Every structure is written in C-alpha cells, then in structure tokens.
Image 1 (cartoon, rainbow, N blue to C red):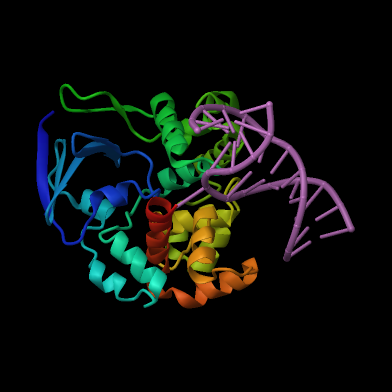
Image 2: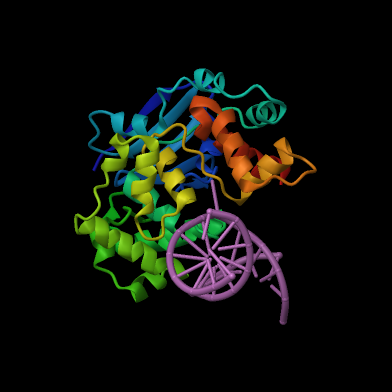
Length: 284
DNA sequence: TACCAGGAGAGCG
DNA sequence: CGCTCTCATGGT
C-alpha cells in the first residue's frame, strides 16, 4: 500500500487548537505531527506557516474527503467578522486565533458525544480509543506505525452487549450508546435527516435518541451537520458566559439562553467554540 | 476520603 | 415546567 501525501494552502489555521478544542477525540500528537483516523483512513497532519501537510495510505486520487473534514475552504476572516464586537469575544479571538470548526462524520460525532457526558476530554479520548480497538476494524497504516482502528459502525455496536460496552469504561452511558446504535442499525433513525431539516426540527429529531439531550444534540448539529448557529452550552460555556458577560450577578438560565440566541449572530457555534477554548485553556 | 468531571433521564411538586 | 437525584469510572 503506497504512502501518499499532499499540502493544503491555508490562512489562519491553528491545527493544534482545532484538534485539541474538544470537538473531536481521536487525534494524537507525536514529534510535531498529528495522527488520526478520518473516514476509515489513517492520516498524519503537520502544519507549518500557511500550510497543512497531509499524509495517508493510498490510493488517494483526490483529497476532497480531507478538505471537507478540515474545512480548509472556509474563509475564517469572513466568519470572525460576523462575531459580536465586544470585549470577551475580542479577547477569545485574539487568544485563539486560527481555531476552526471541523466537519465530522455524524455517527462518529453522535456516538462520541454520548460518551462525553460528565467526562473530561482525556477520559473521553480513552473511552473512544477502547471502543475503536474492540469494535472497529484494523486499518492499513504505513510500515512501522502502531495499529489503528476505524470508528465502529452502528451495526458493529448494535451487535455488542451492554457488558461488552461497559468494558470500554463508559459506565452508565453504555445502554444509551447501545440503544442509539440499534435504532440507527435497524433503520428507525435516518442519520442524514438532520442535515436537511431546519435547526429546531433537526434538534428535536436528534433528541429523540436515547442519551441525546439538548447539549449533545447541539454539538452534533454544529460539528457534524454544519448547522452554524447551533450553540452547545455546557458547564464551561456557562462559566464563560457568567464570568465574561454577567460578572457579579446571578443570571437565570432562561435569560442567558435568550441572550445567547440574540447576541452571537450567524456563526454563533464558531463563536461558542472560541469562548469554550478560551476559558478552558487561557482563563481556567 | 470526598469530590468532581463538556449531561441525560426519571421522579417529584 | 423547574428542581433534585442518580447513574459509572478515574483522577486529584
């Protein structure tokens, strides 16, 4: 299997911030490059000034699948220009400049975020890695590289037992993942539907799945389906909102939700990602 | 030891 | 509805 490579020209693309910002859980850094699995293929990425160098195992006639995943065609300045011009947002953009939204596979994103509830990012990474090892398929890697696994299909997980899944350290999330995988594998849920529906309906649809509440639905809508106004509110973002926008007074959750809906504009989800990464890595 | 971590669901009033 | 409790596991 030949090794193939290419270079994407990009502007303002902070690969490290993007891959460590909690939107995806499968990338590992070693010696300045990032190794992961995208669409069942082993991938290694390295960024330099205005370039992302990509390597995979052949055959790869075109790289559209990876361009789509990395969203290299997005004009970041145009997105940032739609953010509200206020002090917290300016601080987040300055601190995290080059942070991007990826465009992930819906099933992998959905399953990963079912596993994310009340877990820290390192632990989510560990659970997802175990899940892929045990239920994924071993994929081709270049000589000398450690083995890598595809993300298991809904069918592969649907055939597992709850005990099998609990062995991947996912605890009480196991029955949720199993039931959701079985609905999808059994054709009870159409994974492509949320892509075509307007945001509120798509959100309702996703929330019918076991283990998917509002927060996880918003994550999947933003990170996989490309709904740019989806705005996941977790404990970090809640903290950021209170600390940055409403210091020193109590804000009822409903009022906060109204503020979010009105304030962040057509790329609210991307703004959320900046605030999340900012408070998580720079403010604490 | 006790407490907490990017939540969701069920049971209450 | 809005509130509270529980759920499993690993780390501090």
